[in-house]
Image (cartoon, rainbow, N blue to C red):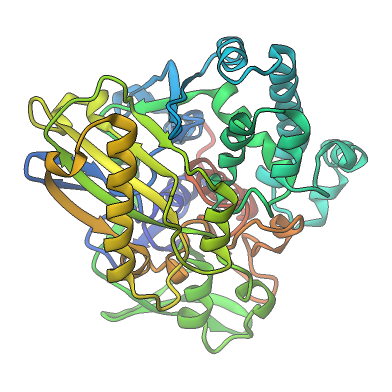
Length: 494
Protein backbone atom coordinates (compact mmCIF):
# COMPACT_ATOMS: atom_id res chain seq x y z
CA UNK A 1 0.00 0.00 0.00
CA UNK A 2 1.14 3.59 -0.59
CA UNK A 3 2.17 5.39 2.61
CA UNK A 4 0.73 8.61 4.02
CA UNK A 5 2.39 10.42 6.92
CA UNK A 6 0.42 12.73 9.18
CA UNK A 7 2.43 15.21 11.25
CA UNK A 8 0.60 15.75 14.52
CA UNK A 9 -2.03 13.75 16.39
CA UNK A 10 -4.49 16.54 17.08
CA UNK A 11 -8.13 15.79 16.36
CA UNK A 12 -7.71 16.96 12.76
CA UNK A 13 -4.70 14.70 12.26
CA UNK A 14 -6.42 11.66 13.78
CA UNK A 15 -9.53 12.26 11.66
CA UNK A 16 -7.37 12.59 8.53
CA UNK A 17 -5.61 9.33 9.32
CA UNK A 18 -8.97 7.56 9.67
CA UNK A 19 -10.16 8.91 6.33
CA UNK A 20 -6.92 8.05 4.54
CA UNK A 21 -7.11 4.46 5.78
CA UNK A 22 -10.50 4.21 4.07
CA UNK A 23 -8.81 5.39 0.87
CA UNK A 24 -6.31 2.56 1.02
CA UNK A 25 -3.22 4.19 2.53
CA UNK A 26 -0.88 2.85 5.13
CA UNK A 27 -0.93 5.74 7.60
CA UNK A 28 1.78 6.74 10.06
CA UNK A 29 1.03 9.53 12.55
CA UNK A 30 4.03 11.22 14.18
CA UNK A 31 3.43 13.23 17.37
CA UNK A 32 5.91 15.24 19.46
CA UNK A 33 3.85 14.84 22.64
CA UNK A 34 3.58 11.50 24.48
CA UNK A 35 -0.22 11.47 23.99
CA UNK A 36 -2.81 11.96 21.21
CA UNK A 37 -5.31 14.81 20.93
CA UNK A 38 -3.28 18.03 20.86
CA UNK A 39 -5.36 20.63 22.69
CA UNK A 40 -8.06 18.02 23.35
CA UNK A 41 -6.39 16.45 26.37
CA UNK A 42 -7.14 15.92 30.08
CA UNK A 43 -5.49 15.90 33.51
CA UNK A 44 -6.31 14.24 36.84
CA UNK A 45 -5.37 16.09 40.03
CA UNK A 46 -6.43 15.71 43.68
CA UNK A 47 -9.43 13.59 42.72
CA UNK A 48 -10.59 16.07 40.03
CA UNK A 49 -10.59 15.40 36.29
CA UNK A 50 -10.16 18.41 34.00
CA UNK A 51 -10.51 18.64 30.21
CA UNK A 52 -7.62 20.88 29.15
CA UNK A 53 -8.80 22.15 25.79
CA UNK A 54 -12.05 22.70 23.88
CA UNK A 55 -15.11 22.52 26.11
CA UNK A 56 -17.99 22.96 23.65
CA UNK A 57 -19.22 19.96 21.66
CA UNK A 58 -21.64 20.51 18.81
CA UNK A 59 -22.33 18.80 15.46
CA UNK A 60 -21.47 15.31 16.81
CA UNK A 61 -22.42 13.73 13.48
CA UNK A 62 -18.97 14.73 12.21
CA UNK A 63 -17.47 12.36 14.80
CA UNK A 64 -20.04 9.63 14.17
CA UNK A 65 -19.37 9.55 10.44
CA UNK A 66 -15.72 8.63 11.01
CA UNK A 67 -16.85 5.39 12.63
CA UNK A 68 -19.50 4.81 9.98
CA UNK A 69 -16.86 5.29 7.29
CA UNK A 70 -15.32 2.04 8.53
CA UNK A 71 -18.68 0.31 9.10
CA UNK A 72 -18.47 0.65 12.87
CA UNK A 73 -21.30 1.53 15.24
CA UNK A 74 -20.28 4.85 16.85
CA UNK A 75 -22.12 3.95 20.05
CA UNK A 76 -19.74 1.04 20.60
CA UNK A 77 -16.98 3.64 21.03
CA UNK A 78 -18.49 7.00 21.81
CA UNK A 79 -21.70 8.24 23.44
CA UNK A 80 -23.08 11.67 24.23
CA UNK A 81 -26.24 13.38 25.39
CA UNK A 82 -27.93 16.55 24.26
CA UNK A 83 -28.11 19.46 26.68
CA UNK A 84 -31.46 21.16 27.23
CA UNK A 85 -29.77 24.31 28.53
CA UNK A 86 -27.00 25.54 26.25
CA UNK A 87 -25.52 28.09 28.63
CA UNK A 88 -26.26 30.12 31.74
CA UNK A 89 -25.51 33.85 31.47
CA UNK A 90 -24.83 36.23 34.36
CA UNK A 91 -24.46 40.02 34.55
CA UNK A 92 -23.16 42.07 37.47
CA UNK A 93 -26.52 43.83 37.94
CA UNK A 94 -28.11 40.50 38.90
CA UNK A 95 -29.63 39.63 35.51
CA UNK A 96 -29.52 35.90 34.81
CA UNK A 97 -30.59 34.00 31.71
CA UNK A 98 -30.62 30.29 30.88
CA UNK A 99 -30.39 29.79 27.11
CA UNK A 100 -32.46 26.81 26.01
CA UNK A 101 -31.39 24.70 23.06
CA UNK A 102 -34.94 24.75 21.70
CA UNK A 103 -35.31 27.86 19.53
CA UNK A 104 -38.91 28.59 20.48
CA UNK A 105 -38.15 28.26 24.19
CA UNK A 106 -35.07 30.45 23.75
CA UNK A 107 -37.06 33.16 21.96
CA UNK A 108 -39.85 33.11 24.56
CA UNK A 109 -37.54 33.34 27.57
CA UNK A 110 -35.16 35.84 25.94
CA UNK A 111 -38.12 38.04 25.09
CA UNK A 112 -39.14 38.13 28.76
CA UNK A 113 -35.65 38.61 30.17
CA UNK A 114 -34.42 41.25 27.74
CA UNK A 115 -37.77 42.94 26.94
CA UNK A 116 -37.25 42.24 23.26
CA UNK A 117 -39.83 41.24 20.67
CA UNK A 118 -40.16 37.47 20.43
CA UNK A 119 -40.67 37.80 16.67
CA UNK A 120 -37.43 39.80 16.28
CA UNK A 121 -35.51 37.07 18.10
CA UNK A 122 -37.06 34.35 15.93
CA UNK A 123 -36.31 36.41 12.80
CA UNK A 124 -32.66 36.73 13.88
CA UNK A 125 -32.35 32.97 14.37
CA UNK A 126 -34.01 32.28 11.02
CA UNK A 127 -31.56 34.66 9.34
CA UNK A 128 -28.71 32.91 11.13
CA UNK A 129 -29.88 29.61 9.65
CA UNK A 130 -30.16 31.07 6.16
CA UNK A 131 -26.62 32.47 6.35
CA UNK A 132 -25.30 29.08 7.39
CA UNK A 133 -27.19 27.24 4.64
CA UNK A 134 -25.94 29.70 2.02
CA UNK A 135 -22.29 29.68 3.05
CA UNK A 136 -21.56 26.20 4.47
CA UNK A 137 -21.07 24.54 1.04
CA UNK A 138 -18.55 27.24 0.07
CA UNK A 139 -16.79 28.23 3.30
CA UNK A 140 -16.87 25.02 5.32
CA UNK A 141 -17.31 21.90 3.22
CA UNK A 142 -15.01 22.37 0.22
CA UNK A 143 -11.62 23.80 -0.56
CA UNK A 144 -11.87 27.56 -1.07
CA UNK A 145 -8.79 27.37 -3.24
CA UNK A 146 -10.00 25.06 -6.02
CA UNK A 147 -11.71 26.58 -9.07
CA UNK A 148 -14.26 23.75 -9.15
CA UNK A 149 -15.69 25.01 -5.85
CA UNK A 150 -16.86 28.20 -7.55
CA UNK A 151 -18.60 26.43 -10.40
CA UNK A 152 -21.28 24.82 -8.25
CA UNK A 153 -24.89 25.96 -8.00
CA UNK A 154 -24.57 26.42 -4.23
CA UNK A 155 -21.63 28.79 -4.63
CA UNK A 156 -23.33 30.87 -7.32
CA UNK A 157 -26.41 31.14 -5.10
CA UNK A 158 -24.27 32.37 -2.19
CA UNK A 159 -22.44 34.92 -4.36
CA UNK A 160 -25.72 36.31 -5.70
CA UNK A 161 -26.95 36.88 -2.15
CA UNK A 162 -23.82 38.46 -0.67
CA UNK A 163 -25.85 41.46 0.41
CA UNK A 164 -27.81 39.31 2.84
CA UNK A 165 -24.70 37.93 4.53
CA UNK A 166 -23.68 41.16 6.33
CA UNK A 167 -20.05 40.85 5.30
CA UNK A 168 -19.71 44.63 5.00
CA UNK A 169 -20.53 45.41 8.64
CA UNK A 170 -19.32 44.05 11.93
CA UNK A 171 -21.04 41.40 14.00
CA UNK A 172 -21.74 44.04 16.65
CA UNK A 173 -23.37 46.34 14.07
CA UNK A 174 -25.44 43.43 12.79
CA UNK A 175 -26.63 42.61 16.29
CA UNK A 176 -27.33 46.23 17.20
CA UNK A 177 -29.48 46.52 14.07
CA UNK A 178 -31.46 43.48 15.24
CA UNK A 179 -31.96 44.26 18.94
CA UNK A 180 -32.54 47.17 21.32
CA UNK A 181 -31.33 45.27 24.40
CA UNK A 182 -27.62 45.82 25.05
CA UNK A 183 -27.47 42.56 26.98
CA UNK A 184 -28.95 40.54 24.11
CA UNK A 185 -26.52 42.22 21.70
CA UNK A 186 -23.70 41.22 24.05
CA UNK A 187 -24.99 37.65 24.24
CA UNK A 188 -24.92 37.29 20.46
CA UNK A 189 -21.63 39.22 20.16
CA UNK A 190 -19.89 36.56 22.22
CA UNK A 191 -20.14 34.08 19.34
CA UNK A 192 -17.19 35.88 17.72
CA UNK A 193 -15.01 34.18 20.33
CA UNK A 194 -15.82 30.83 18.68
CA UNK A 195 -13.19 31.75 16.07
CA UNK A 196 -11.01 33.86 18.34
CA UNK A 197 -12.08 37.23 16.98
CA UNK A 198 -13.58 40.52 18.12
CA UNK A 199 -17.30 41.16 17.52
CA UNK A 200 -16.40 44.77 16.77
CA UNK A 201 -14.19 43.72 13.86
CA UNK A 202 -15.31 40.30 12.59
CA UNK A 203 -17.96 40.55 9.84
CA UNK A 204 -21.67 40.12 10.48
CA UNK A 205 -21.73 36.85 8.58
CA UNK A 206 -20.52 35.32 11.85
CA UNK A 207 -24.07 35.73 13.13
CA UNK A 208 -24.63 32.33 11.53
CA UNK A 209 -22.74 30.69 14.42
CA UNK A 210 -25.71 30.65 16.84
CA UNK A 211 -27.43 28.37 14.33
CA UNK A 212 -24.88 25.67 15.11
CA UNK A 213 -25.95 25.67 18.77
CA UNK A 214 -29.66 26.18 18.23
CA UNK A 215 -30.20 23.83 15.28
CA UNK A 216 -27.63 21.11 15.87
CA UNK A 217 -27.61 21.44 19.65
CA UNK A 218 -24.86 21.24 22.23
CA UNK A 219 -23.84 17.91 23.71
CA UNK A 220 -21.88 16.39 26.52
CA UNK A 221 -19.68 13.38 25.64
CA UNK A 222 -19.82 10.59 28.20
CA UNK A 223 -16.40 10.62 29.85
CA UNK A 224 -15.84 14.29 29.00
CA UNK A 225 -14.37 16.05 25.98
CA UNK A 226 -11.21 13.99 26.18
CA UNK A 227 -13.31 10.97 25.22
CA UNK A 228 -13.64 12.39 21.70
CA UNK A 229 -9.89 12.00 21.31
CA UNK A 230 -9.79 8.64 23.06
CA UNK A 231 -12.55 7.10 20.95
CA UNK A 232 -11.13 8.31 17.62
CA UNK A 233 -7.65 7.20 18.64
CA UNK A 234 -9.05 3.74 19.49
CA UNK A 235 -10.77 3.57 16.11
CA UNK A 236 -7.64 4.65 14.25
CA UNK A 237 -5.52 1.97 15.94
CA UNK A 238 -8.17 -0.68 15.31
CA UNK A 239 -8.21 0.01 11.56
CA UNK A 240 -4.42 -0.11 11.34
CA UNK A 241 -3.18 3.47 11.73
CA UNK A 242 0.30 3.48 13.27
CA UNK A 243 1.18 6.11 15.89
CA UNK A 244 4.65 7.15 17.06
CA UNK A 245 4.53 9.41 20.13
CA UNK A 246 7.36 11.50 21.56
CA UNK A 247 8.80 11.65 18.05
CA UNK A 248 9.10 15.21 16.87
CA UNK A 249 9.24 15.88 13.14
CA UNK A 250 12.17 18.13 12.22
CA UNK A 251 11.66 18.46 8.48
CA UNK A 252 9.31 17.64 5.62
CA UNK A 253 11.43 16.26 2.79
CA UNK A 254 10.78 17.86 -0.60
CA UNK A 255 12.42 16.56 -3.79
CA UNK A 256 11.76 17.92 -7.27
CA UNK A 257 8.67 19.78 -6.10
CA UNK A 258 7.11 16.79 -4.33
CA UNK A 259 6.75 15.87 -0.66
CA UNK A 260 8.64 12.61 -0.22
CA UNK A 261 8.46 12.02 3.54
CA UNK A 262 9.74 13.48 6.80
CA UNK A 263 12.75 13.48 9.09
CA UNK A 264 12.36 13.17 12.85
CA UNK A 265 14.93 13.33 15.63
CA UNK A 266 15.03 9.52 15.42
CA UNK A 267 14.97 8.57 11.74
CA UNK A 268 13.86 9.38 8.20
CA UNK A 269 10.55 8.16 6.73
CA UNK A 270 9.50 7.93 3.09
CA UNK A 271 5.92 8.39 1.94
CA UNK A 272 3.75 9.22 -1.06
CA UNK A 273 1.62 11.72 0.90
CA UNK A 274 2.44 14.13 3.75
CA UNK A 275 -0.27 15.89 5.76
CA UNK A 276 0.63 18.48 8.38
CA UNK A 277 -1.74 18.83 11.32
CA UNK A 278 0.76 21.22 12.89
CA UNK A 279 -0.01 24.95 13.05
CA UNK A 280 0.68 26.40 9.61
CA UNK A 281 3.22 28.94 10.94
CA UNK A 282 5.70 26.47 12.49
CA UNK A 283 4.99 24.04 9.65
CA UNK A 284 6.60 26.48 7.23
CA UNK A 285 9.09 28.13 9.56
CA UNK A 286 10.45 24.87 11.01
CA UNK A 287 9.51 21.93 8.78
CA UNK A 288 9.68 23.72 5.43
CA UNK A 289 12.28 26.38 6.21
CA UNK A 290 14.10 25.74 2.94
CA UNK A 291 10.95 26.29 0.86
CA UNK A 292 9.33 29.51 -0.36
CA UNK A 293 7.25 30.92 2.51
CA UNK A 294 3.62 32.10 2.12
CA UNK A 295 4.47 35.38 3.80
CA UNK A 296 1.04 37.00 3.38
CA UNK A 297 -0.63 34.12 5.18
CA UNK A 298 2.01 33.86 7.89
CA UNK A 299 1.82 37.59 8.66
CA UNK A 300 -1.90 37.49 9.35
CA UNK A 301 -3.17 38.69 12.71
CA UNK A 302 -3.44 35.76 15.11
CA UNK A 303 -6.62 34.79 16.88
CA UNK A 304 -7.10 35.23 20.61
CA UNK A 305 -5.66 32.75 23.05
CA UNK A 306 -6.91 31.81 26.52
CA UNK A 307 -5.93 32.02 30.15
CA UNK A 308 -7.44 29.07 32.03
CA UNK A 309 -7.57 28.40 35.76
CA UNK A 310 -8.45 24.83 36.71
CA UNK A 311 -10.04 24.93 40.14
CA UNK A 312 -11.25 22.11 42.34
CA UNK A 313 -14.17 23.71 44.24
CA UNK A 314 -15.35 22.30 47.56
CA UNK A 315 -18.99 23.17 47.02
CA UNK A 316 -21.82 22.56 44.55
CA UNK A 317 -23.62 25.49 42.91
CA UNK A 318 -27.20 24.77 41.82
CA UNK A 319 -27.34 27.92 39.69
CA UNK A 320 -24.47 26.69 37.47
CA UNK A 321 -24.56 24.07 34.72
CA UNK A 322 -22.07 22.68 32.19
CA UNK A 323 -21.57 26.04 30.43
CA UNK A 324 -21.70 29.38 32.25
CA UNK A 325 -20.70 32.92 31.27
CA UNK A 326 -20.23 35.98 33.49
CA UNK A 327 -20.16 39.02 31.24
CA UNK A 328 -17.91 42.06 31.45
CA UNK A 329 -19.62 45.41 31.98
CA UNK A 330 -17.42 46.93 29.27
CA UNK A 331 -17.29 44.36 26.49
CA UNK A 332 -15.80 46.57 23.78
CA UNK A 333 -13.04 47.75 26.13
CA UNK A 334 -12.25 44.12 26.95
CA UNK A 335 -11.69 43.30 23.27
CA UNK A 336 -9.61 46.45 22.77
CA UNK A 337 -7.29 45.19 25.50
CA UNK A 338 -7.05 41.72 23.94
CA UNK A 339 -6.43 42.68 20.31
CA UNK A 340 -4.92 46.19 20.48
CA UNK A 341 -3.15 46.41 23.83
CA UNK A 342 -2.27 42.67 23.97
CA UNK A 343 -3.33 42.67 27.57
CA UNK A 344 -6.17 41.67 29.90
CA UNK A 345 -8.92 44.01 31.03
CA UNK A 346 -9.65 44.46 34.74
CA UNK A 347 -13.27 43.36 34.21
CA UNK A 348 -13.01 40.22 32.03
CA UNK A 349 -15.80 38.04 30.71
CA UNK A 350 -15.46 34.74 32.57
CA UNK A 351 -16.47 31.35 31.19
CA UNK A 352 -16.86 28.39 33.56
CA UNK A 353 -17.18 24.82 32.32
CA UNK A 354 -18.14 22.18 34.92
CA UNK A 355 -18.15 18.64 33.56
CA UNK A 356 -18.95 17.17 36.98
CA UNK A 357 -22.50 18.47 36.43
CA UNK A 358 -22.92 15.66 33.88
CA UNK A 359 -20.09 13.33 34.94
CA UNK A 360 -20.17 13.22 38.78
CA UNK A 361 -16.96 11.16 38.96
CA UNK A 362 -15.04 14.16 37.60
CA UNK A 363 -15.00 15.62 41.14
CA UNK A 364 -15.03 14.26 44.70
CA UNK A 365 -18.35 14.06 46.55
CA UNK A 366 -19.75 17.53 47.25
CA UNK A 367 -17.26 19.21 44.92
CA UNK A 368 -17.11 20.57 41.36
CA UNK A 369 -14.33 20.81 38.77
CA UNK A 370 -14.21 24.33 37.41
CA UNK A 371 -12.55 25.13 34.08
CA UNK A 372 -12.38 28.94 34.41
CA UNK A 373 -11.37 30.73 31.21
CA UNK A 374 -10.97 34.28 29.99
CA UNK A 375 -10.18 35.29 26.43
CA UNK A 376 -6.58 36.47 26.22
CA UNK A 377 -4.14 37.89 23.69
CA UNK A 378 -1.51 35.65 22.22
CA UNK A 379 1.99 35.41 23.61
CA UNK A 380 3.84 38.59 22.63
CA UNK A 381 6.36 38.52 25.47
CA UNK A 382 4.07 39.97 28.15
CA UNK A 383 4.77 39.50 31.85
CA UNK A 384 2.41 36.56 32.19
CA UNK A 385 3.14 35.92 35.85
CA UNK A 386 1.92 39.43 36.66
CA UNK A 387 -1.05 39.21 34.29
CA UNK A 388 -2.12 35.83 35.70
CA UNK A 389 -1.99 37.04 39.29
CA UNK A 390 -3.98 40.21 38.52
CA UNK A 391 -6.52 38.32 36.42
CA UNK A 392 -7.00 35.63 39.05
CA UNK A 393 -7.96 38.25 41.62
CA UNK A 394 -10.27 40.04 39.17
CA UNK A 395 -12.02 36.76 38.37
CA UNK A 396 -12.43 35.89 42.04
CA UNK A 397 -13.86 39.33 42.80
CA UNK A 398 -16.35 39.04 39.93
CA UNK A 399 -17.50 35.50 40.66
CA UNK A 400 -17.76 36.16 44.40
CA UNK A 401 -20.04 39.15 43.73
CA UNK A 402 -22.24 37.34 41.22
CA UNK A 403 -22.54 34.13 43.24
CA UNK A 404 -22.56 35.84 46.65
CA UNK A 405 -19.86 33.47 47.89
CA UNK A 406 -16.17 33.84 48.71
CA UNK A 407 -14.86 31.61 45.91
CA UNK A 408 -11.20 31.83 46.97
CA UNK A 409 -11.93 29.92 50.18
CA UNK A 410 -13.46 27.06 48.17
CA UNK A 411 -10.45 26.35 45.93
CA UNK A 412 -8.86 23.08 47.08
CA UNK A 413 -6.94 22.22 43.90
CA UNK A 414 -5.49 24.51 41.25
CA UNK A 415 -3.28 24.81 38.20
CA UNK A 416 -3.14 27.25 35.30
CA UNK A 417 -2.66 27.17 31.53
CA UNK A 418 -1.62 30.36 29.75
CA UNK A 419 -0.78 31.30 26.12
CA UNK A 420 2.89 30.42 26.71
CA UNK A 421 1.94 26.90 27.81
CA UNK A 422 -0.51 26.52 24.93
CA UNK A 423 2.22 27.49 22.48
CA UNK A 424 4.76 25.14 24.08
CA UNK A 425 2.52 22.08 24.25
CA UNK A 426 0.61 22.43 20.97
CA UNK A 427 3.01 24.37 18.70
CA UNK A 428 0.23 26.92 18.15
CA UNK A 429 2.01 30.10 17.08
CA UNK A 430 1.76 32.68 19.88
CA UNK A 431 -0.69 30.35 21.63
CA UNK A 432 -3.47 31.33 19.21
CA UNK A 433 -6.36 28.91 19.57
CA UNK A 434 -7.71 29.30 16.03
CA UNK A 435 -4.72 30.16 13.87
CA UNK A 436 -5.43 33.47 12.15
CA UNK A 437 -8.10 35.81 13.51
CA UNK A 438 -11.26 36.49 11.52
CA UNK A 439 -11.20 40.23 12.08
CA UNK A 440 -11.71 41.07 8.40
CA UNK A 441 -14.31 40.20 5.78
CA UNK A 442 -11.65 38.44 3.71
CA UNK A 443 -10.23 36.31 6.52
CA UNK A 444 -11.79 33.07 5.26
CA UNK A 445 -10.08 33.50 1.89
CA UNK A 446 -6.72 34.38 3.46
CA UNK A 447 -6.47 31.18 5.50
CA UNK A 448 -3.91 28.79 4.10
CA UNK A 449 -5.47 26.22 1.76
CA UNK A 450 -5.61 22.52 2.62
CA UNK A 451 -3.01 21.77 -0.04
CA UNK A 452 0.22 23.26 -1.32
CA UNK A 453 0.12 24.86 -4.75
CA UNK A 454 3.91 24.58 -5.05
CA UNK A 455 4.65 21.21 -3.49
CA UNK A 456 2.75 18.19 -4.77
CA UNK A 457 1.43 15.59 -2.34
CA UNK A 458 1.62 18.03 0.59
CA UNK A 459 -1.58 18.81 2.50
CA UNK A 460 -2.66 20.67 5.65
CA UNK A 461 -5.42 20.10 8.18
CA UNK A 462 -6.39 21.45 11.60
CA UNK A 463 -7.51 24.71 13.15
CA UNK A 464 -4.89 27.00 11.60
CA UNK A 465 -5.93 26.34 7.98
CA UNK A 466 -9.22 26.30 6.07
CA UNK A 467 -11.98 26.14 7.22
CA UNK A 468 -10.90 27.20 10.75
CA UNK A 469 -10.60 26.29 14.43
CA UNK A 470 -12.89 24.40 16.77
CA UNK A 471 -13.77 20.72 16.76
CA UNK A 472 -16.34 20.72 13.91
CA UNK A 473 -14.14 22.78 11.59
CA UNK A 474 -11.05 20.69 12.34
CA UNK A 475 -13.03 17.58 11.43
CA UNK A 476 -14.23 19.27 8.25
CA UNK A 477 -10.64 20.18 7.36
CA UNK A 478 -9.81 16.47 7.54
CA UNK A 479 -12.69 15.69 5.20
CA UNK A 480 -11.58 18.36 2.73
CA UNK A 481 -8.03 16.97 2.75
CA UNK A 482 -9.25 13.43 2.21
CA UNK A 483 -11.42 14.57 -0.70
CA UNK A 484 -8.35 16.19 -2.31
CA UNK A 485 -6.23 13.03 -2.05
CA UNK A 486 -6.91 10.31 -4.63
CA UNK A 487 -8.06 6.82 -3.71
CA UNK A 488 -5.62 3.94 -4.02
CA UNK A 489 -6.40 0.55 -5.50
CA UNK A 490 -6.72 -0.62 -1.89
CA UNK A 491 -9.55 1.76 -1.04
CA UNK A 492 -12.58 0.32 0.72
CA UNK A 493 -15.46 -0.20 -1.69
CA UNK A 494 -17.98 -1.67 0.74
